[in-house]
Length: 249
Length: 198
Image 1 (spheres, chains in turn red, orange):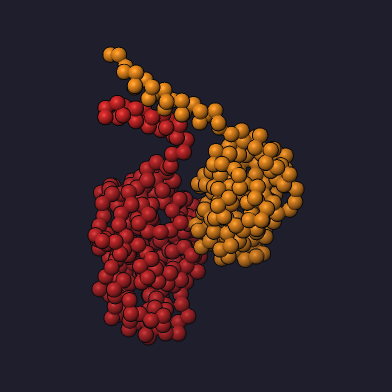
Image 2 (cartoon, chains in turn red, purple; image 1 turned 135 degrees about the horizontal axis):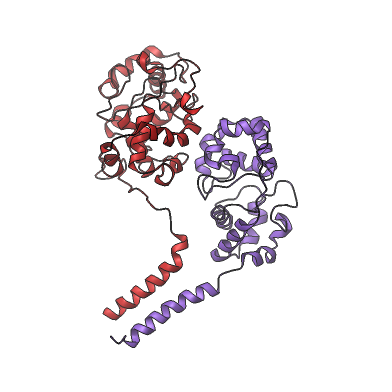
């Protein structure tokens, strides 16, 4: 037995030396469980998310990290009004930290964004903490992408009956509880995430929310999200129309 | 301590395996000539025989390797890959593909000078720059292609095939969700810029 183990060790070493050229990327964060899996707990935390939240953020360093993000989310953090990229400005620190950690641990699928979230692109947990802090300095888009405006009364009613408990009276969310601010988010982005959450396709979703929206019709969905996209964030969080981020001149 | 013979034999066998693997390592340059690649892609892998065929010189080896694998398996079947390329790569081993890809990566890239064409600004505002890199020389991932100096018609065909889902191998799923950001006109301008970055 000992002989075999020695021989195996030598062989494995030889193969390992030969195979090192094909090694994959380092620093891959550990993947957690997904919606639908036994033992899934929304926001179980652990790993990088916890680490990042314990660190003291450096806003100046965060601006450097944000350079990579600005290509798609724009220097202003406004994303695209057609919903391709979400607005990040105004989003809570804990929400940003959690989503970044989840995207790079493959707890949330986003092939387009994945490379940009990786440690070898932006850095470790400190970078996550820093960029989340930097994003707090960005003012929100006064004119996000919105729906067709034809069913807002229904939207308002549905929102009041279904969403305030977590997302707040005005869609402001809750940083402590990791509930995202959704007021003023682009309509088409809200739609895509909402549909994915409802279908179980967004693997880091909150099971309570999945249950809450299961019986929403398409009309309900469009009405409530149109209403949400038009909910105004507090005035002190909103930037002027056409604002350009001076940090990126 | 005297090493038992059986240990020595085991070690020799392992080293022998390793050594023979090295001896069998393929010659990418030779393969590129022998397999007839030069006929369509050009002797220098940078002057294809016809518009719409890709230039391969200086391309990221990890990207080329993935394309060869995917064309052989059928995971990539758009354009001429299924009819023309697949029969050619059918008998390539992974070692062959790796050698070819590595060889192509060593060839001189098209020289790049920032070309002041209308597509240049679009390349940034439409967010292509984020993944494919400044002047499309050094993409963010080694598995993403550099596009600088690539054949214009080829670029347009790939972009359209990725958008429609006709091409869905590899990183196509990362690109597909953003393709709707460009109109046909804008795509033409961007491809024009990329092809002319010399």
